[in-house]
Length: 263
Image (cartoon, rainbow, N blue to C red; front, side, top):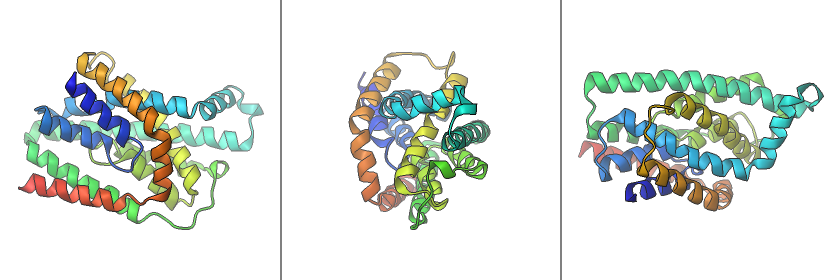
């Protein structure tokens, strides 16, 4: 129960920040609760995303309803809605392909090299530094909105989001940074990033976790607390992310992880 509450709380709060909630969950599982198998830890982290998936679904319910309605009435939809639908479909498909390949590669490497806890921690630290680099490199002048999304945007964002399956790479941090680099304004970058997460989180759990992950006390409590904390903090943290640059925090945390892995 305690493990589920701790991991769920981490997921609920950090999902909206440009830090890797998956990486922090893997780290907490590794250091606090004796996790050893990277595949099991990643599957658990992905399962806990269902809690924040539900929180985001409630928070963006109007946007989601409009998109679903437009999908079933595509020919009568506006150009902005059609552009959004195409963008999300392309990004989701490519994310799934890239993420699946990377996840299987990571699992294969663990089996072949017997990755130790220190090596995993070092890897997470290095990936967090990459996230910080993306955050520091994000563009300044932004003007594009949802109506300006293109197939190129969908392909680029799909690849970027696919890489976030690696623990340590922040999905929100990478996708928001990529959208800003593609000249989308802050508000629309945030909205697009979190809308992108909904089909991916649901799809990944259907493909990877149905039938494989045992529903137990840890996963149930974890999902519940991820939902509660996600719903309670999403508005506050999204507002803060518009005003504060978390890149230096991510950089500092990544360096701490590297020192911890080397020590």
